[in-house]
Length: 424
Ligand SMILES: O=C(O)C1=C[C@@H](OP(=O)(O)O)[C@@H](O)[C@H](O)C1
Ligand SMILES: C=C(OP(=O)(O)O)C(=O)O
Image (cartoon, rainbow, N blue to C red; front, top):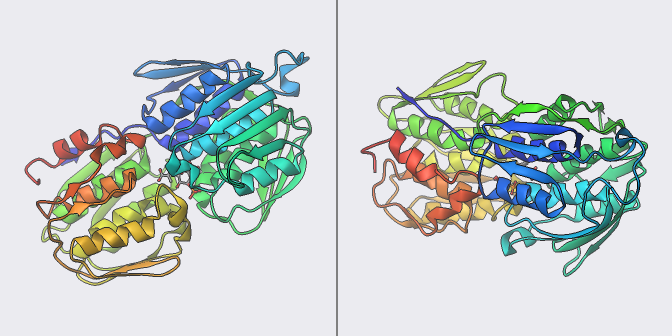
């Protein structure tokens, strides 16, 4: 049995950094994830005037509370310390969506830019929602995309409607803004996507002292700011999926501690798909174990991955080893992530000699023995990590950009090949 130590959750880190920055007091984030996404977030906070101390085992953030909880606040000392700043959020969807909402509660002019990859990704629903709240936001080149500029002068609050069908991150950003407004927020939504990430947001907001309610299509957030706290970052369930998938296709046994039935992350449920395919899965409150079938034969499956779509590439990459087709459905929004993941997964599976069909929001993969080929990662960390699993049973699979894993898991290659020695 192999015990794998998985780094902290990128999603939990991004929320913790936002909440700590907005809180009244000093917060400590233990077992932090140090990756390109989380460093982009932390350095972005520093650019905005927040004090952020990064050490290997703990990140410390000194909050600059906003709104009424900060008591009487002169305009010279708004939530964010700087009255103007330029922030570069690299490839990070969380920093790119969450930080503009944070600064909206402050006072000043704040410009956000990002990598070409992130500039391609949508932010229009967030921009529209901030404008409904009276926040002056301009998209400096292409409407609905970064770079953008926020001319902030605090947010009174009130009721808004949000299109949350393309990404849950817009809703997370607005929810976390809610306690920083004078009157609180009522957010009306239609169709939701990636709902488990909303549940992470609600849980963490409450842990940092906020009052938030979800009833049907309405989220209600009270004013009152946040309280600093000591926070232990749980391991990243999406990062763990590659190790669980590797166990499933190699007949090995893998255990990850710190993840389990008490985890905040929906992507833990990826192991339920592996169980449906024939793996043995044990989920305890604080650990998950996956044991692959000894003969390496997995059953095909049809699965809706709307809630756990970051693990769609993981499943697609091991699908050829199943004895019947694997069909993944209801994952349209994977087309607007780091790359068009449905198309990129299909292109790479075909490069491996595997028959694949795709539709607007689905992909169907036929069984087959992959051939050696170079994977075109499109600089997408999840494509790189997913097809590394494929390579455990097919020597000669290489990556055109192995370093792109740094977005969420800089040590992936060393951890992965230590966990599965002699399989490459
Ligand atoms: O809120 C978050 O931390 C995330 C939400 C998800 O994005 P979508 O809501 O756009 O699916 C997920 O893909 C991403 O890796 C992290
Ligand atoms: C989509 C992802 O990241 P983000 O949206 O946070 O950039 C991801 O990590 O798969």
